[in-house]
Image (cartoon, rainbow, N blue to C red; front, side, top):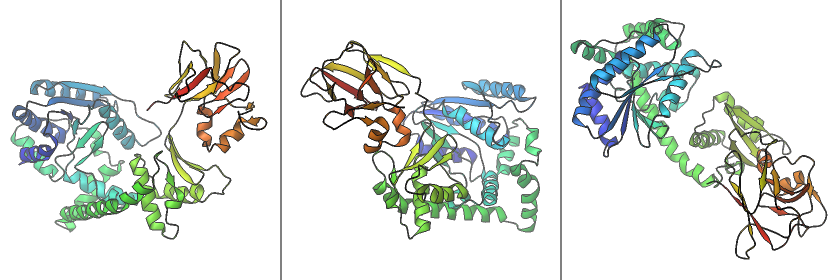
Length: 436
């Protein structure tokens, strides 16, 4: 039965050869999955199989567990690697370990690869109550999906409809041994408290209780999927090519729909907000004063408002001290993935800023606009770079990512937008080739 569950889950995902990765903790659940994957591999040898054990370093026996997993994988004929991780101390141990585990596995995944984990129906029930405790919505209450994206591939959970009891029965029938992590008995952790105390009492009082929870999760998943299908075309139509979301596209008289659209837009960019964060986005960012420059930090990412658009801004390197030299013989590769600058002989059909004769054969390039000004060609008088950036509608967080090109101490061009009155001409083309 368990083998058919694994085979049936993988069947629609393995029409072509691909990488199959097993996340092996060494506990009962993943130990059973290793045994079943061995059978599957023997019948489907066309795939590239890999076993991964993540070494969290949280227990004195962690080295022994890693060696045990390596031995089991070797005996089964699988390649195995042990990934050692460091935990983020700003998070709870449970959260930090889970985050580090998935990050470690994600970087091993090849395009369209599959990562198998052994969570079961008892884990789903626990996940429901943990989500309920946090005040989660439909998606959180729906629990873990059987398949979801992870890195370049997919995370697959073939046992979500199987109980832990069925896995243990299989393990004992086939005389498997496994690792018992003592931390699973530590009821200071919420999941263990549910597992050891609360859920057994609920089972005693309400037989069939777990199946009722699973039905509720299925209903939540159906409703969440339906809602996503209804919201998707609204967000798709509203979102700009740059990935920003116009605030005018949000229905001002329907708070529930506005929140749903915001959550869906953010989910497209792998961002999930708590209810408190969503309220902060609504009131402190979207409804901030018109002349404000509001933002909401979510981990390393920030959500910003600029000219009635919402933007998701990733962390950038500080380029204020960076300097480079551009010549006609040597294009200049800009830092932090900003592309390349070229100084090419003038052509009437080529794109780029048209420059005339230059005093120096080597142009100086930097990104710090503080105190600088330029007299743009075709306009009256000099302008501070700050004013030009505002006029051009360049968001504040991108203004120090515009290359400033100087001939000696004089600013002759800014990015691919402005050339100075004195530097304008038909001898050179300044081309900024952005990275795709």
